[in-house]
Amino acid sequence: MSEGETTVKKIYIKPKSGFPYQGTDVPFEQSVEDIKALLRKFKCDEILSHEAGDKITIAFKKEGVPYIMEFPEIYEERKNQPTRLRMDISARIILNQVKALLIDVEIGALSFMQAMLRMVALQSPQGITTLGEVVEMQKDNILRGQIEFDPTKVKALMEAKE
Image 1 (cartoon, rainbow, N blue to C red):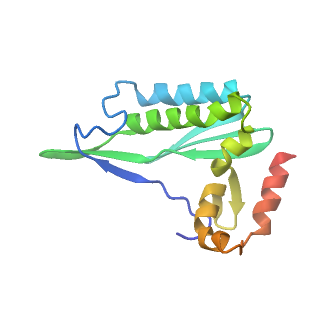
Image 2: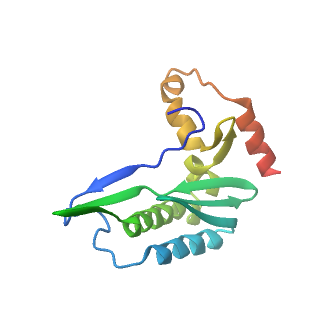
Image 3: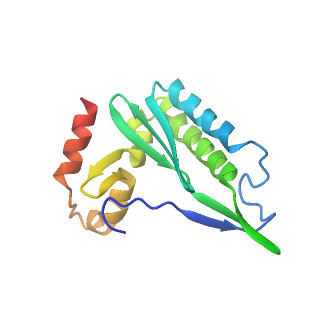
């Protein structure tokens, strides 16, 4: 993966495999609205959802800091039928993941930014990426104590905070 390139996780599941939320009957759109409501509860603003093909993203700001959450593409393999995209499952997973992260914010154990740190959006020469993706790309250097940090990303983050 090149710097600045976001990757959406693709997950393939078998029918009745016990995968989390596989039996959900909550529509995708309802889960997205629930995520947005949760973000509003935590005083986030500029909440936008974007769909480009099968790629779904929610972008928002909190205290001027931009965040991005990407939904994994979940495909259910079916016997004698084409594989089916199950974004309804993906949205339930993201909703519950965000709920879990924000529990620490609610009880005062972490700040919002600490809880959502991997979702902080950064501008790079190749486009927008997340801090989590930058850390993943740099994990070997980080573990060796040799962090390579692109100043344009720091500048973009600081400007977003203003």
